Every structure is written in C-alpha cells, then in structure tokens.
Length: 596
Image (cartoon, rainbow, N blue to C red):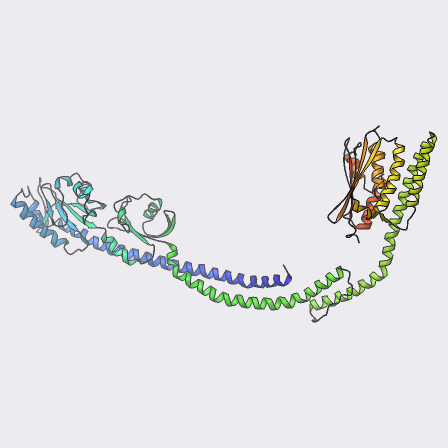
C-alpha cells in the first residue's frame, strides 16, 4: 500500500473509530435507559392490573364470606332443608334472589350457585350440572378441605370436571372457567349472637365461576407491545388465563416459570422456547396466582434503534466526507516529497547518480531532500574516484585464481606423462605432449577470463585424453550439451576441476566401468551444467568441507569463487553425493543476456 493511501486510511480510522465508539456507546446507553424505563413501566402496569383484579375478586370473596351469616339462608338450610317438588322450586327462587343481592353487581362473576345433594340453586340459563357428579369432583374436594375458607380453583374444562361428555363436542360459552369454592355453614346473627345451623343440617357449597376474560380483558389492551404475551398461572403451574386460548387449563412445568413463581413479584430475563424474553410478574395475595407479561426486549427499543441509527448516519456521513477531504490534502502534502524521494532513489539504484530533487519546503521533509541531493553528489564523486580501482582489483583477483589453477593442473599432468615415459609408451607420450601443448597455449592466455564454450570443451577433451591414458581407460566421458550453448561465453577451465575430481577421487577404487556424464542446458534465464559420476562418492562429513576456505580441493573451491566473483553470490557450485553410488556436481551461471 502506498504511503498516501496509508495516511488517508489512518485519518479515516482516527475519525471513524471514535465516532463508531461514541455511536455504539450512545446507542447502548440509550437502549439500556429506554429498556429500563419500559421495563419499569410495563412492570407498573402489571402491578396495577393485578391490583385491580385483586380488588374485584376481593369484593366477591368478602361477599361470599358475608353470605355465611345470611339469615335467610340459615332459615332455608337449617334442619332437613327443602325436600323436593314445588318446595325446591320456591327455595331456588329465594336462593337465586339472595345470590343476586350479593353478586349481581360484579361484572366479573360469570355465575354463582349453591350446590346441595338435592339441588343446584342459582341461575340455570348460564350453566348447569347434576349435583350427584359434583360431590365426586375436584371442586367439592377442595371446598370441604377448606372448612369454610374460600379456595380458588384454576381454569379447567367444564365438561371434564362435571362429567358431561355430551357437551364436549359443542362450542359452549363456559367451556373453560375457573372457580372459587367455599363450604357454607349457614348461620345468623341475632342479638349480637351467632346462631349456627343445628346438627344434621346440610352444608351447601358456594361455587362462583369466572371466565378467563377477567384477566384477558385487562391485560390484552393495557400492554400494546408487539410480540408481548400475557398469562396467569396457579401455584401448581396450571394456566388460568393466556393470550393463546388453546393453552387454558394446561399445566406448564417450565424452569423459567418456576423461577418467576419463586421470586413472587418483579422483573427478570427468562428464556422461553429458546427466545430471550423480559418477564414482568406479580403475585396475587387473593388467589395465590401469578400474573405474567412476556415481552421481547427488542420490541421495547425498536423505535429508539431507528432514531439512533438515523442520528449516527446523519452525523457520521458528513464527518466521513470531511475526513476524506482533509486526509487527502494532508497526505498529499506529506507523501508528495516522499514520492519524489522514492523516484530519485530508484533512478540512483538504476545507476543514474545525476538525479536531483527540487526542494519546495523548509520543513523536515525538505531538509531530507536537501541532504539526499548532497549525498547523491558525494556518491557520484566517490564512484568516479573508485570505480576504475575496484574494477582492476576484481580483474586482478580473477587472474590470480586462473594462475593458481594452471600450475595445479600442470603438476598433475607432468606426473602422468612421466609415469608413461618410464614404461616406454613413446607414441602415447607424443600424443599426450601434443595435447598438453595445445592445453598450455590455451591456459597461458590470461588476456581473457571468458572463452567460448566450444573452445573450453575442446581443451577439456585434450585433458580427458591425457587422463584416460593415465588410468588405462578405466572410465569414459559422455557429453550431453545443447548445441546452441557452444557459442556462449563461459569462464575458462570451469569444468576441468569438476571432471578431475571425479577421475582422481571418484574412481580411485575402481578397476573399470567408470562413467562421467557432462550435461549442459538452458533453464529459463540460467545455464545449468552438471558433472555426474558413478564413483565411490563422498562421505557426508567431508562433503560439507569441500567448498570452504580450509578445504584441500583447491580446484573446486577456485571454480566456485570465480563464478561468484564474475556473476554474483546466487551462482556457483552445488555438490550432491551418496557413498558407493556416485557424485553429482551442479554449476549454474547466467545466460549471456543476463550477464553483467
């Protein structure tokens, strides 16, 4: 990435990052405040609604308590009570009137009856059931267990409670109701004395029935929040009222519900069917039931989120545009001198030491440009002073390496010819002397370090002839060199030490079957040569020392050093060897188009 782009990006980050952090902080702070206010508000509504319902039910509960000292009821049920026929009908009319006086003012009460073994007293228009089934029902059981105290029975299926299967398939208005039951012990207050029914008098059971609309009618419209759900559950988990009518009378044993009931009243975050919900709940001291409102937290902050998003976008977009403008102007002022400096450095790297930069400012960057111009002038002067000296030093070092190589080869060759002369091989000595003469003429020409490959191969073949006679033709040499490489200039005698190493060291323990293969081919921008033998190989420890300064093998080391001096450090010799299998020596030089 260019410096200018980095600067622009840095300014954008420096501006947008604080803006994003402030925006997120504002967003979450506002969201939490709104959520808390909404939570408190909803909780207050739940408490108020619960209080309203409690007050209504409390009135009904108190009225039912007053009914226990109703003198007219005492007169009706003291003793044996009505026996049947016309007397029951007249008694039902009186009881219905009495119940109407106590409960007709309550719009929440669906129906109220007094149940005896003989008759169910009350309004027969709304609901009815046989009294004999009542005494085996849960309602009677809970009424008698209360011993005169009121007991609230959560919502149940009317047809199941009273064994009315014929009504199960019908759509009756009072299919699901909840009830309050109380066993009535008739009594009357006379002269401030409570007179109770005598022994043998039947104790009727007061049954007050309610539809779930008592709760639904208040909660349904009081919390107009999308996705909210209200429900009322008993202490045992039975659903008394619910937004979903199909759940009425069902039992819920969810862990979240138990936690809410344990707390009594308040707010809590709960997980309902895998969804995180805010629960606001209140416990009724009248019924012992818990009223709950479940709200998705996101619904409480839906409006504020859109407002905050608009605010952040409306404020952030202009700031981002301004940051881009200022970033561009400031980065251009900083990066322009740097770009000029980089361009000048590239020119200097390419060898143009006449590059000069126009200095327009007097700040730190301007001072750097001035120093660069001064440095460039000084470098140019030093190059002019030292270039010729360094070039001559390099030529002298290469020449010295060649001189070091020639006596080394001559010493070995004369030893071979001397050995052959001792054994009287005159013709072979003559041929070898002619080859040696050509070789000496080639090697003593120190005017050039680079020769054509075909000339160096011709010299190498003379050398191989001498060595083949020395070793009584225990080896042969094959050439596999691309023809187009024969006109390429290569370092003089660069292959001889590699071939000599194979002959002298590789085949020292072999009587016959030696093979040296010399490869040469172009690969991309390089020329790769390889001298491979099937000799005895080199031990790993000795292999690591071959090209080091202290190595005994002068020829290999000299060739490697010459290659690096001529072409650079990435070129030179690599040696691979496996004991008893052979050695491969690779030599890489650049193709003439890549040579400096």
